[in-house]
Length: 138
Ligand code: SF4
Image 1: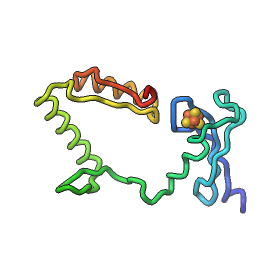
Image 2: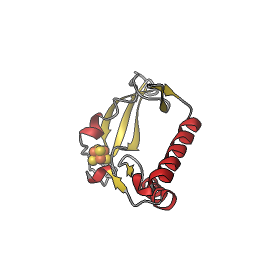
Image 3: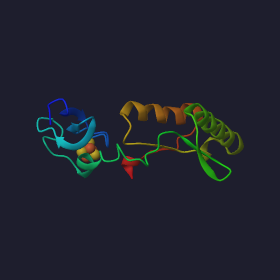
Image 4: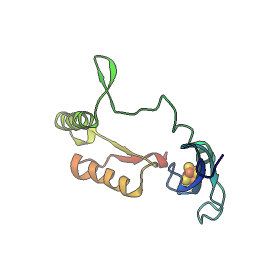
């Protein structure tokens, strides 16, 4: 295998906010393995099981590639614009019918601190609820 066909790409694990450093082992344009970054100040060459093996979904053929909306009892692939419009209309309807505290927002450890900040801001300032939680607390 030539150098061009196999390379190691330095990146940060996307699974939690710890931010361990790792290398993607890429062969022929596909990720085939993970190696910890021994010099990274956070993990110093260690990774948890998600960091080591969490790459295997990348080429999974069952991976969702577009949003789904249930229509007539079946999930149908739609464009993002339609999905976001649907969610906005549903949130507005629930808020109008049942009040803002009928809605809760669950953020994700997979998102950045900035994205989680925006998510809680959206819940509090736009929806009007303090029902905000995060999977890392569970
Ligand atoms: S390797 Fe484990 S602890 Fe480190 S960032 Fe990834 S999920 Fe978090």
